[in-house]
Image 1 (spheres, one colour):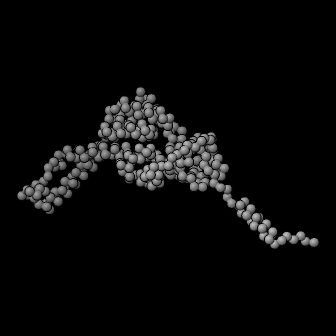
Image 2: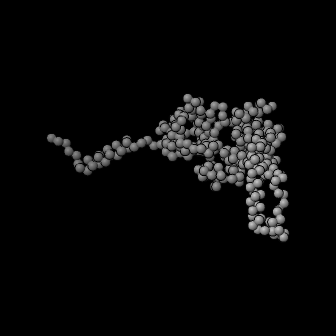
Image 3: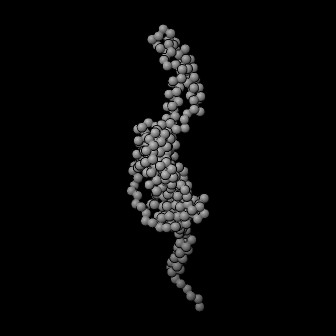
Length: 290
């Protein structure tokens, strides 16, 4: 005698079995990233996850490198706020390991995540990919704004832009002082002068321009390595370092102050960066300068 089941019950059992088999075959849901530290045993490099969007990478003997994080499933896009470079970190299903392709990090400690308020509209971190993509050519106004927001790469760009202006001004001043560069407008270019000749003026301008460019190129190799920046720029940079004491930026500010003869303020900037706890090289330099 064969045992039979009603057709409706068979269909119901089949549906349940198919659902269970499908559920078993589904990949595990991506682990939400937990805050704390991860360590790479081979290099002693430490990753510190501070919030869902903030992390720092600490290599021995170097200042921590800040990152903006954006997690999608198991992949975390990490954008360096210091270099603008990006990489992908892969989080394991159990949340205990992170891999960035070069280093393999294992959870070292746990910590409560810091609550981060929404980024201000039009700020760099509100559109982090676009901001970092424009960082190289954004210009002084944007670098100034983003540096005040605490974006280290923008601070570094800003002081380098000020240095570039100082080098350019040094060359222009010497070109204009060169005896071969006329200090007055040629008669052929003065419309109220009887000698005025538009075509001759054009040729004269071309000749003067070529001479000025040649003089500028001859001076390029003579530009001093360190040129003093204007006092207002130095004051602004020192204030920005006090607000966001990243090592590379503050050391550059200290060098600029030293060049301008403001040794005492340069020393204060180095000590400030050192006290932040994130600037081992600034600490060494501050100690050696005392």
